[in-house]
Image 1 (cartoon, helix red, strand yellow):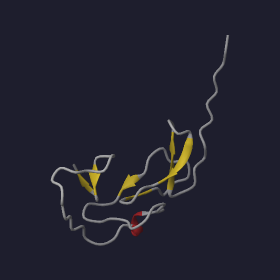
Image 2 (tube, one colour):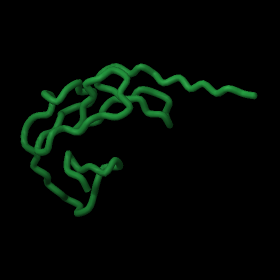
Image 3 (cartoon, one colour):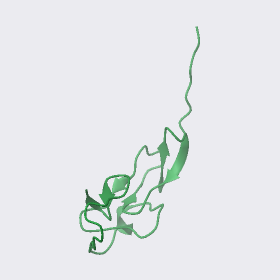
Length: 86
């Protein structure tokens, strides 16, 4: 009988635990993580965005998003285009 124990890192605020990478990753632009040990980052409220990564709370989400689409249908790999779902 074998026992498999998987350690989940206690990631700091502004990051999240990514299981495939088995590491803490920075929350990307447009998201934040207010809790230690998060498994995902939270999206900024509609119409706002963060500049830079590793934001710790929603107050980092500021401004109004103005999307200039140069290539129609182009999105980032996570299904976002600067805060707008693709």
